[in-house]
Length: 87
Image (cartoon, one colour):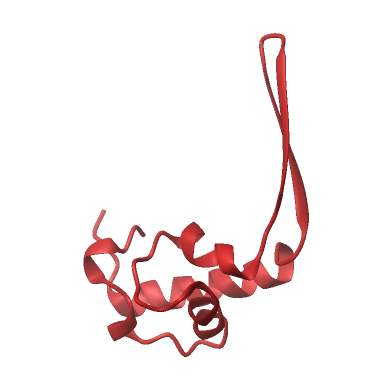
């Protein structure tokens, strides 16, 4: 599988930011996992500041600016590190 170009990565990041805002942003989600007789439950809130971490992208932008630029489709190729595009 070939690696993505920066342009392809930007499109994926933008689409992901839109989906994140529409489906997860500021929502609490409870996760329940069970194996054998052990059940673990934890809850998390999906904040705007979490989006950059979830993408795995390395950038000099702070978390808030990264999300805003991604969502508004204004993130620039020069603002992401090519070596660290995990998609």
